[in-house]
Structures are given as C-alpha cells and as structure tokens.
Amino acid sequence: MRLDELARRLDATLVGDPEAVVDGVRSLSDAGPTHLSFLHNPKYVEQARTSRAAAILVRDAEALPERNLLVCDEPYLALARALELIHPAEDVVRGVHPSAIVDDGARLGEDVAVGPCAVIGRGSRVGDGSIIGAGAVIGRDVEIGAKCHLHPRVVIEDRCRVGDRCILHAGAVVGSDGFGFASVGGVHHKVPQVGIVDIEDDVEIGANVCIDRAALGVTRVGRGTKVDNLVQIAHNVEIGEGCLLVAQVGISGSTTIGSHAVFAGQSGCSGHLTIGDRVVLGAKSALYRDMPDGAVWTGIPARPHREWLKSTVNLQRLDSLRESVKDLEGRVAELTEAVEGHDT
Image 1: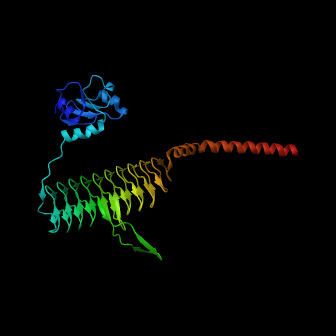
Image 2: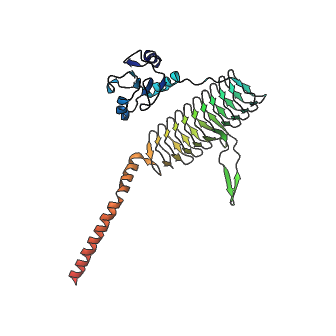
Image 3: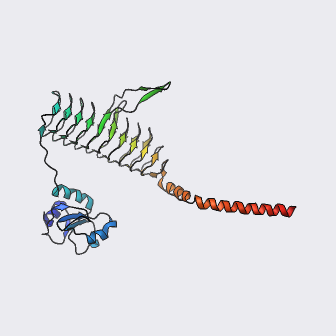
C-alpha cells in the first residue's frame, strides 16, 4: 500500500514520500525497506533513527528528521489498524463442519462458522457472524452474541452468557464449578454451584483462562474488559468495565472489582473484597483488604506503593544498620567496663 493511501486510512499526517510502498509491518529492529514500523516509547528513539523501515508511525515528527513518517496522536492504536489493513485475517469458511455436532434444539444465526468436532448443546443460541472453533464445546441453554470468536477447545458450560464481539482464546473454560465445599469433621462436602457466568460485550479472554460459575447468582466480567492467559476468576466475582487482568492473576470468590482496574502479572486478592475504580495492583502483589478508588498498591501484603517503596529501601539498609548496632554495642561495652573499673 502506498503511504499516502495508508495515511488517509489511518487518519495520520504523512511526512515524506507519498509514493513509497509498504507490504508488511515489522519491529524497528527487524524492518526492511518495504516495511512499516512504529515508535510509541521514547526509549527506542535511537533504534528508530537507525531502522531500515520504509516508514514509521510516530507521535512526534521532530524526533526523526528526514524519515518517512505517519504522524498520529496514538501510534500504537494506529499500528493495530495498520495490521488489519496490511495483514488481514484469513477468511473463515461459514457453515457447520460435517464432524460438528449441533443439537436440533440449538439456534445458529446467519454467517456462523462451526469448526470440526465442535459441539453445541440443546437450547443454545449463537449470534450472527460468530465463529466456533474446532473442538469447542457449548453446553445447553448457552447464549453467545454476534461476531464472537471462540478459538479451538473453548468450553462454555450450561446456561452461561457471552455478549457481542467477544474473543475467547484456546482452552478457556467458562462456567466450571466454583470451589465450594462445606468442611465438617475433616470431610469436604461439595456445595452445588447453580449460578452462571455472564461475559458482557467486547470482552477478550486469554488462553486457558478459567471463570467459575457462581454458587448462586452470577459471576460477571464487565464490558470491554481484557483478560490475559492463565487467569483464574472464582465464583461470584464481579469485574467492572474496561479492566485489565494480566497473566496468572487470581481473583478469589465474591470479590467485587470496579471499572478500569489493572491487575499486573501474578497479582491476586483474597475473597469478599471490594476494590474500587481505576486501581492498579502491582505485579506479584497480594491484596488482603478493600482497596479505594484510584489507589496504586504493591507488595505482600499489598499497601500503598509509596509505603512499599519506603519499606523496601529500609530493608536494603538492614545490613549497614546491623553493623552500626554491633559497633555501638562494642562501644557501650567498652564504656561500661571503663566506668566499672573507675568505680573500683
């Protein structure tokens, strides 16, 4: 695609040769003379200056003089759109594969694709334009919205709901039983989990994520939330809109999370907590108490980030403090001995 055409379709300002052509997108270090690349982190300015890319998506043209540039307010977002234009997804064959099993009581919308060995149970509904990947299993009375993409081996258990334009990656399980047991006399008696999971519109669920059905009521993932791989969301959890849960996060049961919260990698929280809007929980942090709106907490147990930084600095000073105390103890001992000898 010519740069002038690409700039027009990305709503970007072109600086440089409008007739230059790009046929792919690469990183700054891998790009060649026919590739588009991008710069959204000032850390990589020097790498951008030496890159062989035909053109670079940038926010500030002054950083890269004498280069072909596509200038836009959000280079990373423009990159996503450029990838869709230059590397479009492969067309999916619509219809039901002969090896798939679709119950006579299930209803499929228009232009649905059902892959090999997929199973769709009685009473389930799949919206227009949705894709059900190979080996996916959709239970009974499940509702899946329009333009969803369930990758291979996704499992949606009975009665759960998935909104429009959702993406569920391979191996995700929605609606498995919550971890509920009544422990009496050393025996763990299973408590039936009879609720559902409700995934709202525009949610993306990573590979091998597990979202448990509620014991009673609903486990909910809010509109526009993005969940990375290997995340565990327990029964009766309520997650607000636009949240980000990064890899290996764990959310214990009956916790409520507000909108636009960020849980960094391997962080987690105990159950029955109330967590506010726009919070950030740092990587590997463990939260054991409620978290107010807008808070940024880190550590184990998690606490305000500045407090954690101070405690970490103090911990690093322990060796020198110990040596100082040892020296002071020696001096006190010498003074005590001198005073006792003087008294004698």
